[in-house]
Length: 356
Image 1: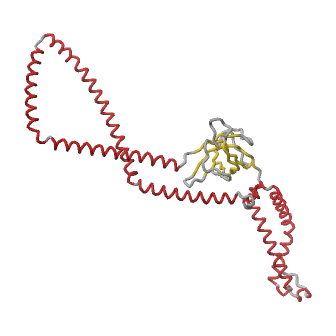
Image 2 (image 1 turned 90 degrees about the horizontal axis):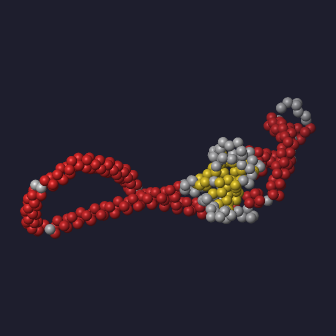
Image 3 (image 1 turned 135 degrees about the horizontal axis):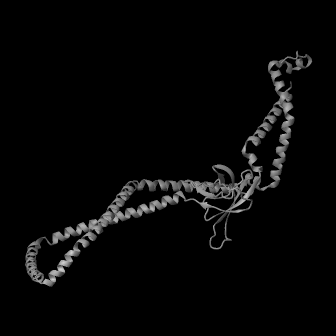
């Protein structure tokens, strides 16, 4: 066998291997998704953070399509919102009561998730479906942090008020410490006046009319005491509930106050990482949406799609015709491995026994 023949056979083997590899990629890879049939649905959201072209659409966690277009809904008066056009695989019909929910992860990745639904009617193409958005985890964390800051500020203000009250009490005691004698004399005068008042009261009570009025008052006193007791019981219950609420609030706020520094630090790191990730995604999206990009041409150029379809059909036909050649190559390789002397000029002149 000459060197030219060997090069031809090696090149043919490489070509056949490449063709087989391409056929396997098209057969078992995700490339066949490009020419599967789709139908379009128009979803309306009040807000759609993180949604862009290519955002996945799922149902029960299974990928059924992707977002093809995002635009503002300026046609609705007052409400506004965002219109999102999704391309759904035709083999995944959606029921009428299937509701789309926009969810976001902590990293900001958006996903449109459809609920299963139980209706027998199905959504038809170009139908407008109302969707809803879940709460953003970062917004929830921001609101919790704001509430925690307000609570801690309230506790700090209350502590400062109690500190001021204690300081005022100490100042008052220090200021009037030298006037205790005057206070005692004033107390003695007050007792004398009280004695005089009691004598006047005895004279007043000696009057029969006043005694009758006092008797009526004493008769009504038990009812008044009962009402007072009920009022005090209600106030006691209210105080107990308020004390329990303050205890629970203290149990909740104490660990958060201790870890507020680390929580804020982690949130700042997460926001920084998120900003860098969004910048990278933005650069990737710009490159992906270039007019001369490969994926852009593959999606938007119908001539390229037809060429790929014709190439796939040609490869399929070529595979059918290559099966006999591959079978002969296998037999040839087996013979060459068992009887390499048949490859030379002697093998061409001298016949073999016919055994492998």
